[in-house]
Length: 214
Image (tube, rainbow, N blue to C red):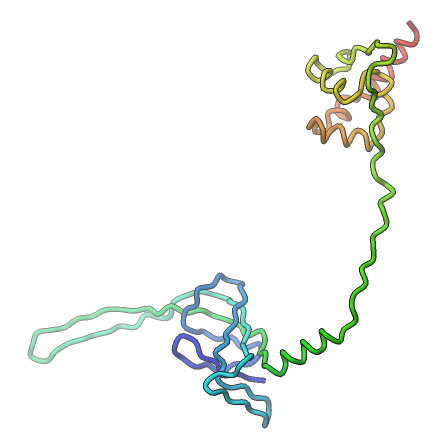
C-alpha cells in the first residue's frame, strides 16, 4: 500500500520502508511522528482519494536524521545598473523512514479485533517464600546486661548505639546473623558490606565463647 501525504507545503508518495527527505519537522532522532494530511492511499486497483484529506488515515514514520541540503548559490544582478548580489542557502531537511500507513478501515478493523478479544484474567502472583527472615530484635538486653559490642573490630560507641537501637545487644545475636538479616542491617545502617568484610560473625562467635568460659 502506498500513500500520498502533504507536509511542509509539498506532497510525497511513500510506501512502508521508503526513506524520504522532507521539509524540516521539529523532532528528535529516533522519534516516531504521524503525518495525518493524507491525500490519497492506494493498493492495486483500490485507490481512495480525500477531499482534500482522508479522515482517520495517517502515515507513521521514524526520524532518521536532521540535516541540511547541498548549498545553492543565488545571484541577483541588474543590467547596466552596476548591481550584483550573491548569497548561498542550505535548506534544512528531516530524513524519515515510513513505518506504516494506517487507513480508517484498518483502524476500524483493529478496534473490532480489540473489542472481540477475550478479556485478560488477572492471575495473582504467589507470595514469595524466600523473603529474608525478620531480625531477632530484643526490647532490652537479657538480664539487663548488654555485651560490649565495641570489642568487635569496626564497631565504635556510635555504631554500638545504633545496633542497640535495632535491638541487638549480645555477641550471640551477631554470631547468629543470617544472610537475610545481614542484608537488612546493611540497608538500614548503610554498612556497605562491613559485616562480611570485617567478619563480625567470626569475631562475635569467639567473643561469645570467651564470655561463656568466664
